[in-house]
Length: 187
Image (tube, rainbow, N blue to C red):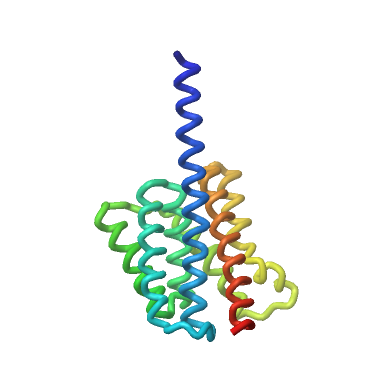
């Protein structure tokens, strides 16, 4: 009986992890699309960033109520981007509104750990403002958040799903950015 229960628990964890990976990739892509529609000349009306913002915000909000690691990571990233001024377009305003609506309607209370993750995300965004040549690679690859979350994982403050979620999100964000860059050059 215990073997069956163990298999059941493992299968639940696998389904949750795969779902987080897929949604993390989708959120990363949608954020980058909303960002690029607003900031780059994609020849797409900037109003199209709004539905992308609502969708990614809704997905992030859902993930935040479904998984504690997602709540910590996305709460921290959202707060860090807000403080650094990276939430600066209609698409992102609507995305943030969707996140806040879902989180507040579900009564989520975020851990103080969110502020530490927000600080990591904030430092990642400072690469465009602070020009330190020896820190170029750290800012280029946004290593503050990655290293910070890895340390929090080592200290057992976040779970493995949180690390997977960040890398899925970041992978999709970078990939979408590269595809958008090609699209800009082809238009």
